[in-house]
Length: 402
Image 1 (tube, rainbow, N blue to C red):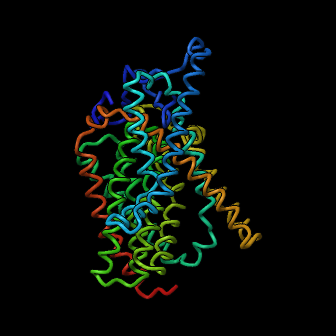
Image 2 (image 1 turned 60 degrees about the vertical axis):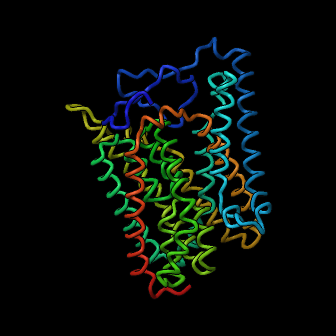
Image 3 (image 1 turned 90 degrees about the horizontal axis):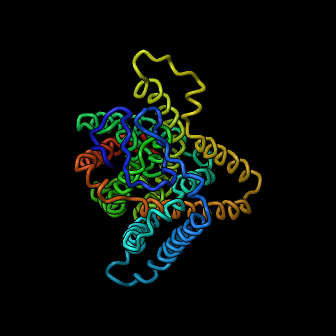
């Protein structure tokens, strides 16, 4: 990042050594100081495609290694002192770590900029998020619709606004504020991606946010079930607290399983309900940044066409996949679950490819320049989320029985 994270408004940062690869999210071309990077016709010769093919092999190879570790580490760790950790570590951790290691290797070999066109992070993660919609069965949410939806709306609103306010007090860029607030209040990396598309954040900001989500989610898998036991929470309240706090669905599942079967069911429903509201937040951010943050003084009020242009279209695919999956499961019954399982497995593959690409794209200097303030904001927002979610879960799920 050639600009500090305190940069405000829509002042995008570019780097002279950035490769001519597509950004994770759209570049903000509203400023005359930014020129879109377009590969020249010379660049797209045989050498370009050969290097891109090599880059794709690197990405796919690291993704395959990620899947291998995800599936085998729990068995390797069984019966050892790190059994619980081995069972709880998720594929995003392996994918980003392997991506970072791959980043170092290809940089030392002098390949990084030549193969960067294969780091199709935006395509991978948007496809994965559309497929994620298939796992959100609207009929399942209805089983706990009242308290789950109430908690999701109140929690997302409260935590988002608190994080947005605190990030502003720390002087963070509006786009980074949006990513941090979305990630900590809704569903981690998935929400950050949706927000990044809506506000046109820079790839460094997305990489920073994704790293924070993973760093904070992993210890939460063990800490929250332990605290639920210390506080003497019922299974329903514990599940609602876990589902409302941990920022990744897989981590919620792991923590819920440690807390008990009923806690797992409630945690999953609460998290799925929050995930379903991701599209609503994306619409709100699109409107806010278009109408307020990036609107120039004296400029005409943007119309619906501009809002539609800015809106991340994959959110519509996410919603459509959820509706189709719900309709399909209603008609197919038990047989339909096998089909949805295949879709979910495909979704995992695309997200692994995306996380590997994020690791390969990261520039350490850019992350270092962001400083400690985003970490402080994310940590403070996490503590606020813990307190508010506990209060809401205790109020809304105290008499709940599955």
